[in-house]
Length: 341
Length: 288
Image 1 (cartoon, rainbow over the protein chains, first blue to last red):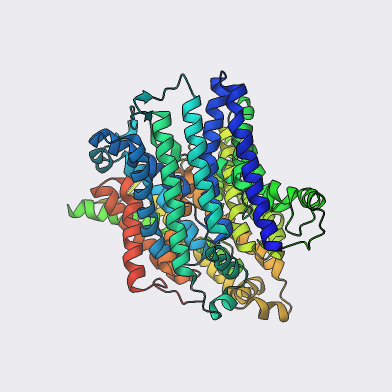
Image 2 (image 1 turned 90 degrees about the horizontal axis):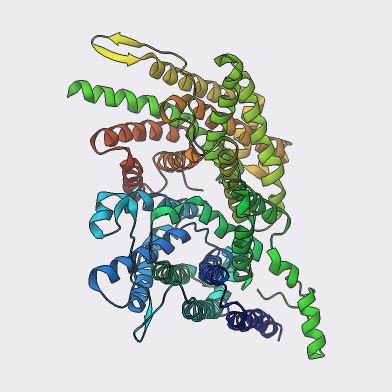
């Protein structure tokens, strides 16, 4: 019973958010700037939630998320440019490519201990930029230091998406991100998810019960990389150009803010976090280089003083938050507070 | 050819000595506190920027060091006290410590960029001129960097073995619970380890500034390099870090000479991975 309630709570929150997001274009379709920001929010929501799936639930410190995003983006861009396949197929193949690379990175990595994984994955991020800029990168079509300046736009039955009319790409982003988030939700509440929670909370005990977390971890690492690469590919076709600038640390920091503001291991906190972080980043643009100083401070302060983020305020683990009280009143039950996640 | 080879070797050994000093700092923090300090590279830049500020006040080398090194010491101690220690009570402190030090690194780097601008700063050179040794020209700057780094490391190793504080540090690294039982103030030792490591890496930032300059993002390279060195040497092994730093310093010089310095990290990872396949615990590491 307790578990059911918890499951419905995060799914309900997600459905509620997406119901509102479905209606937003009715009011905002004329405001290209706002629509663009919302599309970016939807894209990063997937990246942040996929990261949270690995960090917050599977308990693996990985810092390769932006690298996976970029691999998917470049993969699909190069593929569609050289072979002329449809961008939709490119998005899928870009995701598969990233998922494969994710498994290849995960194979040696997941046998290592915590901080080692963080560094190896971060190193993947660090060497990706010189690689994409190098002559080898140029030979496979990354465009070297300039990047790729024209990436085929998405289309639907002959209709080409354009930056002048953002409603079609908005709904495309909405659907893709929703499916990706549903997959993440399913994994969290699958037996795999339970295995992770068990291993995270008491590794020795879980292993003595015969839970071999390695294969689950590898699978989740691959799935998370797949989802991240796929949404990265979508981003590439949406924006229409790519350069190694995305690998800069600013974006990495914004991604961290999404995670800590939303709450680590608190699905769908990362989704809420991504909207907050991206809007905040837009509002604080006037601060110029001080903006990222503030973002760094936000990460430190959130980790120190609000480790469960916004989601922790809405419904704390103890089940006594405002959302829980509301749910209980609606249902007319006083079900036992649960601690299932 | 032979002449070039020897030049490359000398440059590798000079860089290796500074890398060794910085890798020891990382091995110290990881070995003692079990925290992986992602802000390590930012203390490298902090050393450079603090020195830049005080050189700007027309101070000489010695007064600058007398101000900057204690400042680094307290910055390291404050980091442990206010940012890492509060997390220790939590069950998931290992992960949150990584997050918070990474947040600190990004905070500091962006702070340097906001205050000093994105362009590199240079520090005055300690010694100019060259020395002729049987036909080879050695820059006095390189020689002095080498000897200063070696002197600092010798001082550090003497500190560990010969002083009460140093022995306390070693005791905590070997057995945290045991050290606490015999009354060693663990928190103080943790703070001390962070403080010393900040001094070691920050001083490295000053020593390498004539070669690599001071820049807001310069620390990331150092963080990854120091980590590769400690992982190659065996995590937490100070002797291992020493050997690994010189090996990788020389590898870097050769790769830079033959292929260009952008390939340094690739070469380092190749060396690291091929070593770890044969010896997963690193050159001198022990498991656990």
